[in-house]
Amino acid sequence: MQAATGPVMSPPAGAVDIEALDRARTGDADAFGAIIADRLAGCFRFACAVLGSEADAAEATQNALVAAWHALPRLADAGRFDDWLRGILLNECRMRLRVRATAPAVPAALSPIPPGAGDPWDLDETAALDLLERAFESLDAEDRTILVLHHLQDVPLAEVAELVHMPAGTVKWRYHEGRAALVRALGAGA
Image (cartoon, rainbow, N blue to C red):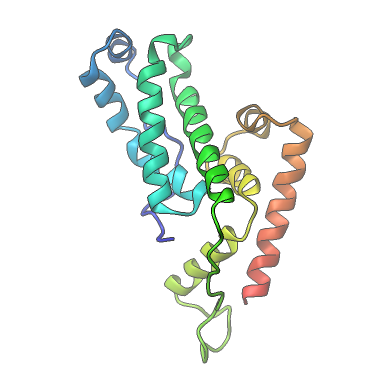
């Protein structure tokens, strides 16, 4: 996976323009396009972080935005547009993960540090990011999703539980287990 540029952010890029949203809900594609333009990069970065693949992330983002356009007239609370959009995107990412799980696995080369690299903790930024990326990809998809939502996007664990449709206690446990697995994977790669 190539790292998406910039930090992983929530889909929202600012408060949604309620007037534009009302126009979009009545079928104004330009108004919807303007709302989405501010959120597209964040949606893509989120999908990349969850899926670990830019190609899958692009497809998931596109499918989520089409689904959002079709479901927009049924959006009950305009003030929660960004949470609603994030939920649609998360569901699309989960569908991509299910499809991927049924496809035959292709083994990846796991050489965490190039031979002769010296002290594994004395890495340049590119090698360190590559090591972190491989460690992150080694996590279970659900753990990766929970870590992205809570740690990188600052979504409270109670809201993460709602988004991933799990009990709050399970989400807390998986968050802590995912962090521990990430630390172990980083240690094994070093």
